Length: 316
Image (cartoon, rainbow, N blue to C red):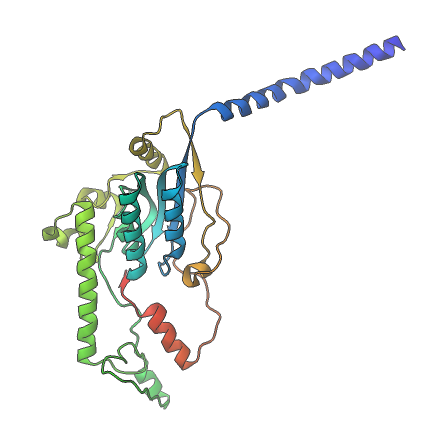
């Protein structure tokens, strides 16, 4: 019995000696993590076509007001969208920056154009990969398609009753008049001038040189850096270093990325629920509106849809 008990004890001791080192190492690691300084950085990913500002403005407000979050990173992969949406996010960033002493920067992997660039101009620093697409400072209407001739070819009659000679401007089944086209051009020019002024002021780009950096032109990250449209070409590592410098984050401090649920294609368009976020704040793909709209519209609904969602001032 004594020999059996001794062997049992020896066996358990050997097992303990095998298990103890990794266990102690893990406990030590967890303890060191608890004691090591950490800094929270809020991450907001803006991707796809801009159609709704609610999601982005919600988390901008949350991150700026949260005392635990020291700075904010916008991960930008956006080709543009509705100017109202871009201006709403742009103004929200400027207002929050004025009220809260907190830095916000933009990191571009692939695309930061038009409305996306408008938003980026409100941040303190823009970093882009060398081959990223930057710019497209301009405005356009992208959905003024004309179907009148198509309907006439198929002997389809269409009649629209409107009050006001400009009311049928965006009606795809009616010819646009010279007066209506002039009105649209005035709207576009007014929007464009506001775009130019905001970019010029925030990026210190002279309006006298707008032919070089505006007029709807696009550039690579390297070209945009030469023009002063961004602050540096780089990668996520570069963004971390800029955040550390701006927010005075010590190199020994661990950065914790605080991310909201990522907005789905459906919620971007209609303001519905968001889908789950990805594991890394730096992993994303450009979405140019791949979601499908499966609803069928009658003529009235189609016209309302065009008026409310598509026929709007667009920065793209």
